[in-house]
Length: 277
Figure: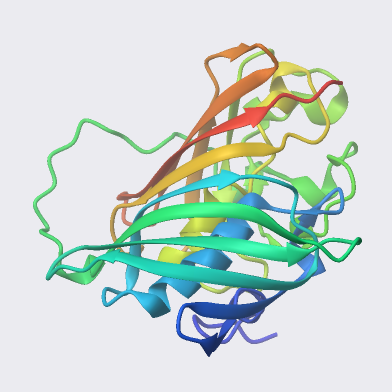
């Protein structure tokens, strides 16, 4: 099978939006990106991100924050965008995704505020103490789809080439470590390389850290903020997720995404409801 390319892949087709009128885009949300029947939050962020990318003069999501108001389901959706400010280097907009409920009412699913830049024009001056996570080679890692205890019905996993660090997969055999950590290699199953829009999926695509704490089940995102730091180099990504605090039935999850050139290409923090299991 030929490797998919950016702009011509299942991810691109599933996140495509069509301009209906100024400020209004139509989308067809694909069932292929669901977890336990509900659409993945990173996938939805990529759909909304594309609509904002068409509305704003700069091409790339830079800082994007979403409030998830209700679960989104496969099927038609409408994304409404508003430009808040445009500048030479950075522009800001907001967007909301709507769906029609079973009773015919119009329901807002997600509300987003985002700033966009041209990542290719950012300074190449990097001064950092951050280091990429140490993960065994992919061939020594565990494919989630081959796990003896997969995390529920998930069409999403079939579209990923994720391989998890064995140190963070105790949950797959009923022996979670108790540490709020998840690490692994990340690719799309069709071989498409990463770009700023797919990074919005990547920060929310691995199994949640709650599994390794010992809680399995749906972990719905309440709020997710992602920073895309630079254009990723071709090749597999390394992803590290960490949770330090679960309290009041909610947990935070911090993500870092590193590319094949050892650059930190994306970061995120989300607040999610902890599973009840």
